[in-house]
Length: 111
Image 1 (cartoon, rainbow, N blue to C red):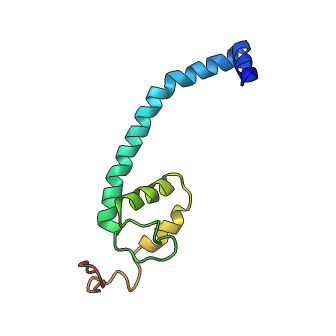
Image 2 (image 1 turned 180 degrees about the vertical axis):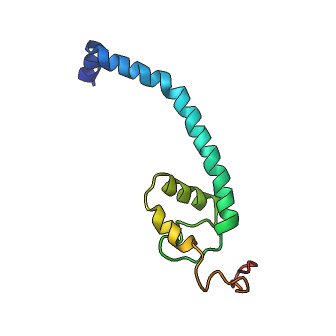
Image 3 (image 1 turned 90 degrees about the horizontal axis):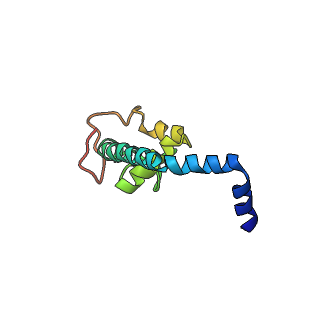
């Protein structure tokens, strides 16, 4: 640890870089808060639209829109572009799941 501190003291470029990082932390916090707010809104929207999607492909017990926490996990996965296509496939409407007269057992949702 002492060597690292001596390196920082001796290198003006590293000091300047760390100072710039420290000065940008409040702005990074604001951006993170804004991103959380947007994800919060879309998590609620996802729960209302995709809560009863059939569990297949990327939608399973952990990655789904049934609860708020799972919705946030799915949105984080989509935001980081890590496997978002696995979540997209089950959400797309396809026969026979898009039949408006189909009754889903265990829920009051039709169609």
